[in-house]
Length: 631
Image (cartoon, rainbow, N blue to C red; front, top):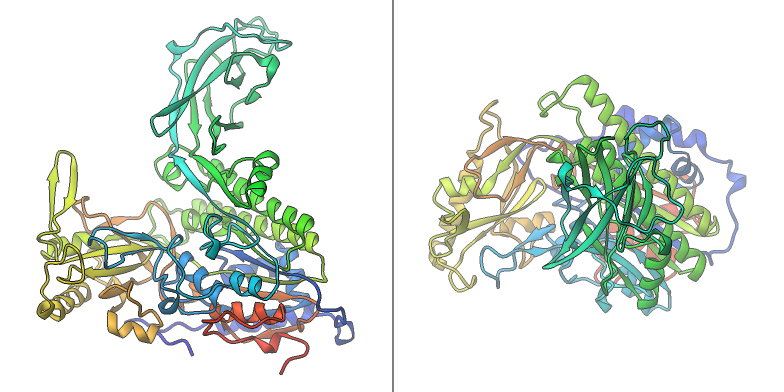
């Protein structure tokens, strides 16, 4: 049984919701005589819809908005909900989903954490850190199965231990996005080879560039007037590298709101998606959003080349920073989310149809990406109005519908002789306040900083503790002498500093309401109860209560601030909003509703469907109850 101690443990699924879920699925079930007797030679396809909440999914299925997921649920098994791990974060959860092991075993204890052999201020990316437990793709390959992974967190096309036979891992960002104004006085009469392109006003030209490292890649802009109305009103542009439209160009004619992919002439074949955000007919205002520059990572090399040729460079995830800073609007963010989700789904379908892998691990990130930005449901949230909340809920529903559409495409490619598992790693809770935990440590004298020019640095010679945050969770590491390269806390003072941190965080209250901010506060040794104990675990581990999220920043000078985004995870996974999703469907899958499962049960169950043993370090169990014939 999954056990969590916290200061606020009163989390039970609403019984009315559970009853309605059972009734809904049972009504949808085919008769027992229609149980499939097909062979079990089909493939196994696992689709992770990041952040898909059990309650949201059920409501939208009930309303008929998710026909493909409803079809799978009505043909197979659905859990009331799935319980994530602690902390309920994407890298942590997918490491456990992939191995069937708890975070304490996988070593992935957060999306971002500290390795104690590094200086106290240095962090490690949980998505790229080595797994300490055997992953399902290794198990499958060692048992003669072929494996394709597409966007699956914790995989890496460049690492033999973290890839399948075909792997498309997360792309590499080569440059950040930015907003670019083309000033009115930059435009001049164009000197282009235009071919058959006609402009009814004198064509104008300008340029911008994409910068990767120290290298600038110039893109020329040609503005034309396509309306024969005797007025100078420019309404379309072309993007090109050499001002010659007769030998090809990046894109055109492009108008206000249009996107254009620009692949750079470098070995990585990296590229940026550029959008026209402002376009005045007299060219007095012209603004471009230059999306981040990304390149594709895929194995084997010929697959990477094929993807770049047929699907284009890795498009990147929706740009939350640009949205929160006003460089893009909500619709642009959704367009980015759709582009990435479709890119991943299209490649998944291609790999299924071309190579017929025994095991497919596919990923859809858009629900998580939209819930972070649009889960506006609480009047305490910045900018809340009933009207805006309704608009944003519509964006969330769109994200679930897009996931459903892409699930349908993948299912169609694989066919119903395959076995499908549609899962999520965690849910999402609304937030209203950011808590700067390192500022709290700093005020207590546990973290010491100094300023040099306009930058603030950690003074490792005086700092006793530092927090690494991910979502609503934080690992706080003591700068221990003999363990940390920068250690200053003598071993005999370790317990005292640990106690000081715990008591400090227990005393933290919301300045507006006076309520406690932290939910779970525990020392490293006690994280064994949460299956989180590992050499990478912080000396103190905390999660906030629902409504709050954490930031590691130590240079802002404040401890609390209204959040400019609206959804978060990392909390106690027994909070109902954090409940995840589990649906299974296939020739060997029963038509039934099952009790809640744990995400560590997924890998052993998938292996059972493949007729192979579970991963060597799995601590979950096979969900025998979902299979037609089971022990």
